[in-house]
Length: 469
Image (cartoon, rainbow, N blue to C red; front, side):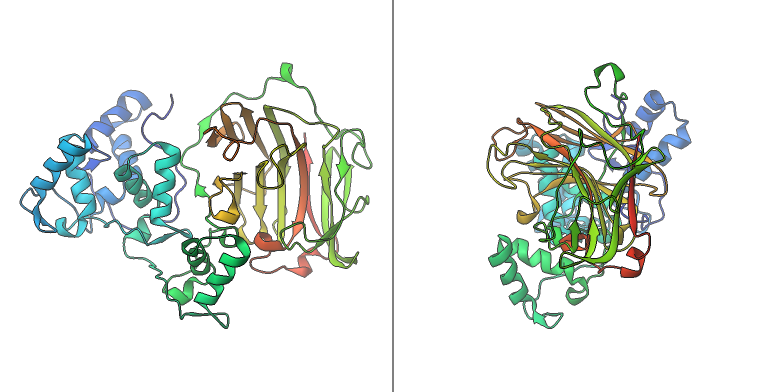
């Protein structure tokens, strides 16, 4: 196993907020920093200095030089000695002595003059810290303390005293009280009041003492977490290939492999394009499929584009599906390679599931999303499960999912960055039925249009997604 305990190559939410100094006794997830560094030397081939730097990168809060937390058994924590609290954790929570001390220092960071204190209400890239910790507990098998520590490591600037939005029912959000906006979300989006309030705060952070995060998917509920690790995986074995389109021809997409979804009714997301089956919107040339979204009046909409599907021509139950592509980057473009159920055996969306191999929106350039939606996990309930990966959109990348009865692994360029495991029951796992592939470029909509649409960028040649072998 390449990374048994530390997430190597972890994408950070922002710059680490503190200068750091090495201390071998610093507690890092229940182990001393020295022990973790020694493991890196022995198993990763690092020098001692490189190992120390890696440990400090993985646990920036623990090494915050501006607030060096140190264990003091006599420190009073909410009326009790720190030593007594740690002893209670050992007896009742099954923690080691080091883990118990770390837990007490984490929960009472201010008393120890230490790094950031846990605050469940802080917004971390658009989601409450408590919601992110709860997700880690449910999906990563972490205990509460470890989940909280993971969130604080991922968002050090937030817990160091950055933007701290708080709910105010009377805050005016684009002319309407926050409470009315939240109530609308409850009535029209099926959200709980707590989820609705979070959504309003994400969309109007400045009204609640915060600042835009630049990475949240506000209109789609709870945003996906940043990919925590990149794990190398074997490339696809050509001997197992059952279907492909190499785009080694010129003209319209091969009709034996592709059909079109057509229409301009918003597609459930308030999208602004009319999907057509015209060659102006989808064609093959120079070894690539090109899907073009362009600003032009058509069918009552201001834009046209194409949405290609393999439904009825190629449908699969389990396997590896991959696509090599480049995405458009204009504000308002919403490119996707994804999968839907062919038979919808459990009912309409989201009951029968959705697998988003890759999504990218132009107002958040360089961040691709891999996500699943089910009855239990979907953006209408702010519970969708996925991950966000930073990429160089100027380059070609191969996006893939490996789908088996046990789970769905999300892969880019032969590195796994996210995995959704089969938790049982159709509400969480409707993926034991045939699915097909869709390729499209939408314009605007609830996510793609969060920051408007740059119409000039869609004029002329428009915005093109290229797909190649």
